[in-house]
Image (cartoon, rainbow, N blue to C red; front, side, top):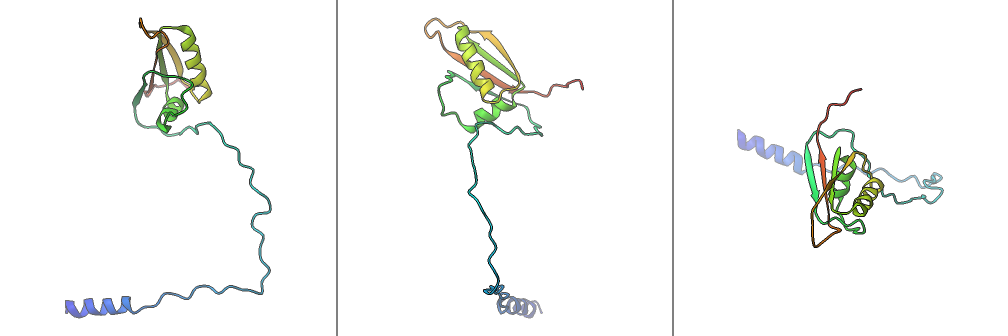
Length: 137
């Protein structure tokens, strides 16, 4: 009985033909879809997510603002961090890092922490973190 049922199902599905495609109405007037070229301009803004449920942190060691080869996770972390800590030994490096962070979508608190380095005076470390902080309405 199972063999007959399987064979009949196989024959019914294998022998069926696909439906006929819709015929083109050549007599109809064609519709114009796009009347002008799109005006596209690239943006460097990160679109922030409304729903973030996870806690995370990211460290950017030896940060250099002139480096343009950061991956997408860095820009996501910059835009979604609630707390950013910049560790450096020079205030000039701090202000340039803070300026770069603000230009790339940072809206969280940016904190300065001194870093003691004797040889490399312009070394910058950035700590990005997302923590759930209860805010008053």
